[in-house]
Image: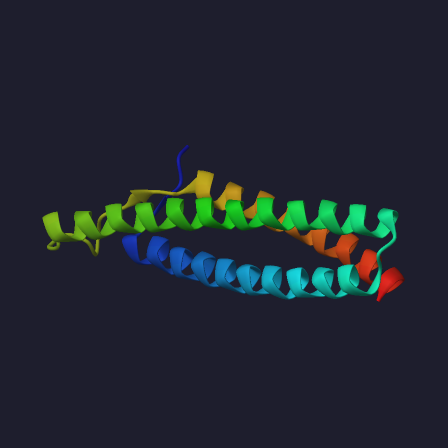
Length: 127
């Protein structure tokens, strides 16, 4: 059976996810700065290769954040259009749960956490 939610519940989840994505984007910036510090201090090929690897991973995660942000704001726009069309019955209207968005956020957070842990290990060895 499909789960349904009110427009208010969906909107609150959107706000929560968008705030999380802002946090992760800030964290990416901090991680990038730390990698730059390592690259300046260490010119060994092995270290620079790992710096490059992590830098590429951070770029991928930033792209994922952008994609998730776009998907969530698109769904929010859909909800806003629904409000404009039918504002009278919103209290009782139920919408399909945005399960795909929830799963996408969960997968992103898992991958981001793993990357953060790997990067922290790397930084602790070379800072």
